[in-house]
Image (cartoon, rainbow over all chains, first blue to last red; front, side, top):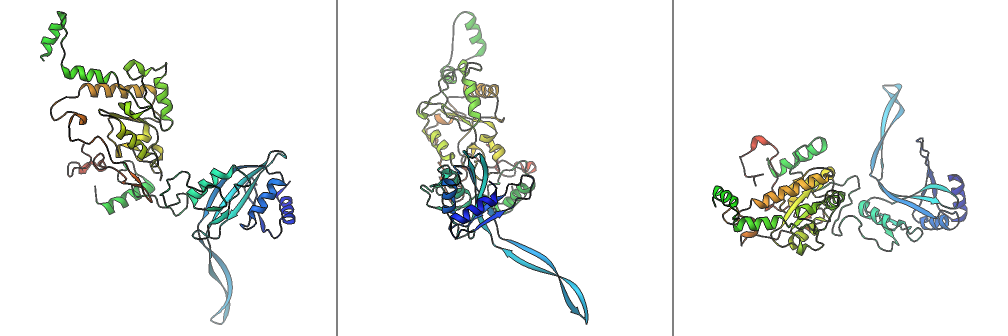
Length: 208
Length: 213
């Protein structure tokens, strides 16, 4: 069963779901299925009950910060009465989001992995995604870990608490813009980034 | 007591000792470690106590599961920031005199996880450490060596005078600050009464008090 077949089966059985196959160009060719958050639970339930994907081996998160994409476009313009081609740089902002990836297997059909992806609206307020723990029980702790380290809030999770960091902790350390605490007071063999942070620490705290 | 006279007397079959020697000998020969490990170093610690390396030869066979009955804390492994308050609390619950062996790169400085957001950069930031053993993890021989070093240290302790150990001075603290879980890091991140950052630039040695024990 290839990804396109799964996609068309899902589209036929889960009405209005928006699916997208994300092609992986690397030699592994592990293409994945992007599912919209509203229908993710229905899609997951169908995959489990009817498509035989009875095992979720892995849940992980990805942080996609907002990035600026600059494209060079050749535009024909009339300069001093002569038509010439001029490069114009058009800049577009790609908004950031958080992504959660589930690796699904079918033990009975011996197929997998099927990477199932979901994306949040943004990285600030709209970080809610439906929890797939009611579908695959094995996702429980791993969704807690994604909540802890990336800050994705899983609606419908039975016990959404931080897993690795303490409850009072406010940051999400696996996000790309996480700044770790300034405890660089003793770095005897500092180099590269650490040296930079150590020098920064020294300039703020005072020369030692 | 005069050492020569003592040697002469022992030749005559008369055994003499001082209270200090007897006291130190008793303590160093019955160091009971606290039965607790944090990471892979604990596996080496367990190996040290088993038949092949047999730490019991040095009087430390009784690993106590309760801090109330332990003399020695072997901090064996990575101290995460989430675990650090519990380690300090266990240390506080141990009765004096108490000793600490910081075992392995992680317990000394954070080791390979030093730049991580979740690992304490050395347990000596919160509790006083007597012996450090480098290694990742240190072999059982290294732990035995540290143990012998600790025994030597105990043996040389004075019961009176200004060099006497902490527990013999009435006003000295035997409990240390237990850090709280903060929003971004532990609060405080270190106990300045126990640890100050050592000098990084050697040329500045002696210009201030930092790094001096």
